[in-house]
Structure formats: structure tokens, C-alpha cells
Image 1 (tube, one colour):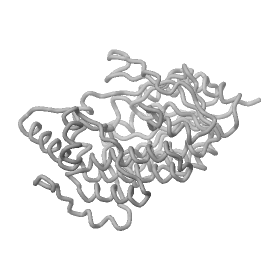
Image 2 (cartoon, helix red, strand yellow; image 1 turned 90 degrees about the vertical axis):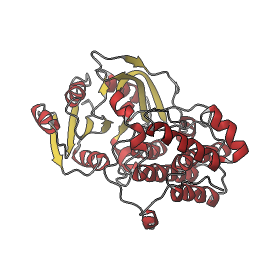
Image 3 (tube, helix red, strand yellow; image 1 turned 180 degrees about the vertical axis):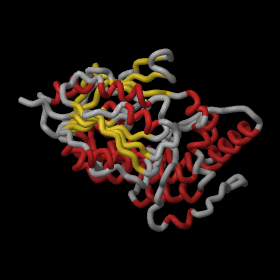
Image 4 (spheres, one colour; image 1 turned 30 degrees about the horizontal axis):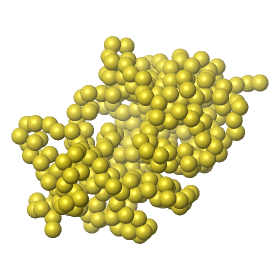
Length: 367
């Protein structure tokens, strides 16, 4: 019997320092039938030339104008011929037997099962930099995808994070989930994989099917500026709203509602006071579903203040103190959970968003 073809989809934008290593890991897979689709998303460095040099019968390279990584992934899927889909970001690396281990495990499961492998991370260079194994926060899969998703998002405590490169999915499952949302620049992966998980019949864990993702110190230092963008905040809120709709459409039990409250609370608090209209939109979304803000977490002094002052005043003080520290040349860590987004390359605002054309941060302590 002929082995199924695996399509490895690689969106690329200005990744000349890393692309060759990522593609080498894709080409080195021990699974006998693999194709690689690279979509260069308007790179202005040498990425496209590097990809072209590595092109072959098994590695197809195409180029598009800069339209964002969601569009690039959708284009790659359109070109792909494989029965299974493996996503690979240019900063990530697949272990040589990653796909083979997941395919061997999938042979004993349902045809529409979704699998994920183990993850590690490294700083800057996997050859010369620090290399770490990711602590296992989700040790097993689940035959009930909504329960798995609730656990992943913290329904049983800490929750977890599964990188895009850890997943391996049947193509028909990817097509059923629908395309990547090109309205989103931040958390487009979280929104997409929420749909993908809910489309599956079960989710299986394959320990030892390793992928490694890159953490860049330089990018981490730029994180505050990236997360303070209005369009970035707008994208994060929209992604949280969409994920919440999917979750509540599958379950209305207490844990599902608690997860939705936590998703929205994080984005509401993060948006305030820089973008109060976004915070108000998030609060209205909760009220429409008879939900309340989740218990707030953060620095100890913030947790101490908000029961006495209310979350808005406590957050206002925290936000302005952080601005003062940055302007004085010091740095402070974000007190709320935050993600490293892709650059806010393209965000088409949803209808009715015109009222946010000139967002303003409040400079006075809220009432």
C-alpha cells in the first residue's frame, strides 16, 4: 500500500536567517512521501532566493504580494496535494521522525482524528544557542474535542500551549475547519486551531514526535511595542470573541463559560486604558452572554489594589506606571499574560468598527 502524502506548508516573510534550517528539517523527514510548499509573502530580504535555491521536485516555491501569513497559509493549502497537513513556521524545526511517529499513531485511530506531538524550544540557534524541552502540560489526548479544548485553555487549571508545528491533521479535517482568518494578525493560529480541534472526532497525543520552536531575544524585547498597537489589540479581541462563539456553540457547561470569561477578561484588561472602546466592546460581549469578568491575575500589587479600587482604576495606575518606567529608560515586565504576535501586517476591521478610527487613551484616573 502506498504511504499517504504529507504536505508541509511553510509561509515565509523576511526569514532569511532561519528559512534554510526549517526547510532542511522538512526535507529530512523519514516519512517516505513528503511535499513542501513554500509561499513567500512579499519578503524584502533574501528569503525568496534561499527558498528558490532549495526548490526541487518535492519542494515547490511560489511568491505573492505581501498579504499576511494567513493568506499565505491558505494559498499553500490550495497548492498542496497531500492527504495530511503539517504546518511549519520559518523559525521552527521538525525532528526527523516527527511526521512518521504521528502517522504511525494515526494508523490506529479514526480517520478524522487530530494529533499533536511534543515540543521544545531554543534561543536564536538550535546548533549553538540554548535548547530546552518544553514541560509537558497536556500529557494525553481526548476523545471529546470540546473537553480537550477547555483543558487546553485552562479549564482544569494552568492549561497549555500547542504550537502550530506540533499538529498533524487530515486534509479533509483542515478543509472542514475552513481557511485561516485573514482579518486577524494576532492569535490567528489560536482562532484557526480552535476550529480545527472542534472539527475532529478525537485528539491524540504522540509523545516523542518532537518539534522545536524558536524564541528570539531581540523579538521578545520588541514585544511591548507590538502588543500596544491598536490593530494588534483589535485583532486579539476579535480572536477571543470568535473562539468564545465556537466554544459556547459546542458547550454551555460551567467550565466552558469560565474559559470564555477568562479569554475575554484578558483582552478587556489588556486593552484598557489605551483603547477604552475595545474594552467596552469586550464587556458588552460578556454581558450579552450573561457572563462576568473572570478573577483578575497579575502582579501582587495589582491583585491587592483592584478589590479596593476596582479593576479600571487599578489597571489605569498599572498602565501609567509602566509608561513612566519605559519613558525613564527602565523596563518592566507585562503583568498580564501576553503573546508574541506576528507583525500587524494586515487587519480588515469588521463592519461597524469605524468608531475606532481615532482611539484615545484616558489620561485621568477613571471614576
